[in-house]
Each structure stands twice: as structure tokens, then as C-alpha cells.
Image (cartoon, each protein chain N blue to C red):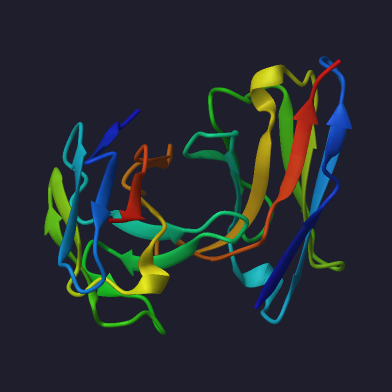
Length: 116
Length: 107
């Protein structure tokens, strides 16, 4: 199992960014997928989830209405479209696979910096 | 949202020590409680799921217990590679949440 995030970088407040998570080594369409973030010096924060079939999504209150999670089954890729970015969105963003109501595999993360 | 409170926030311990970290939930979560280890610059690692089930490949010195609102992660004999941050996480409600973390440092 391998999860590789990409797409992080520097963005101005109010800007947008799309994160990607390339999945391999397992049947991507069989698992719910998630995004979790860690702000500098802070703990882990659950951000978003999408069901295995892509029909059901979930967002933390802190990102609801600004972030959109999606998945491309043919490309085995998970996405997080982030908009109206704020300084408190600055964090390392991890994608993770869900099983048995837990997150059993995680990527190494991609850093999002929100600054003018 | 269900709040998870870990204690202590940090601790100093020596190799070979027995270490116990607790996690208290703001309401009952049955056994929907998981534990993760996180080292700087690395991917978090699942240690324990469903409160007490050891994830495949995780050393048996790690164990978890509890149900309802009170949970414990125990490392029976701390090893050099165990110095890291540890997080509990609940999946009882759709709004999954993490504890604030416990940093285990070398004494």
C-alpha cells in the first residue's frame, strides 16, 4: 500500500489549491478515503472523508463550504480542492485509508503554506 | 463534537520504562477508539484499533484497553524507536476527532 500526496505549496490568503493523493498497492475503489491535517506545532485534525463509491462526503466544520473532496476511480487518485484559504489552514495535509473505523495507511503528507 | 482529552500532554521516560497514556472522551464512544504513533516528518502509524486490537505488524509491547469514556495505551517496555507523539482518535460519530496528543521524550 502506498499513498503519495502532492500539490502543496505557497498560496495567498483567499486563494485556492488542489491536493492530490495517488494510491497504489490496493483496490482503491474498495475503501473510504480521508484527509487529515497537522498545523505547525499542533496536533492532528480530521478534515474530510469520501466513501468508497464517491457518493458520500464529509467535512469538518472548519472547512465546510470551502473544501471539496473527490476521487478518480480510474486514476486511483484522491483529491482535496481547497478554496478561500485562510492562515489557519496552513498545515501538512495527509491522505489516509480507512478500514474498521480507523486509518490504517497514511501518506507522508504535503505542506500547504498560506501567507501573503 | 466528541472531545478527547489525553493525559499527560508530554512525559519523559527511559528505555525499558512502562509508559501509560490515557484518553478520556466527553461522552461514551463504546470501543470506537484508535491509537496512532507519529514521528516528525513521517506518516502517522496505526497502533491499536477498536480500543484493544493490535494492528498487524505492531510490536506486542503496545496494548490498549478501555471502553465507554476511558481508555489507555500502554507501552510495556519503552524502546528507543518509541520516542514519538501518540494520538487517540474516536470514530463513534461521523465527526471523527483526535486527542491533542502526548509527546514521549527521552529522560
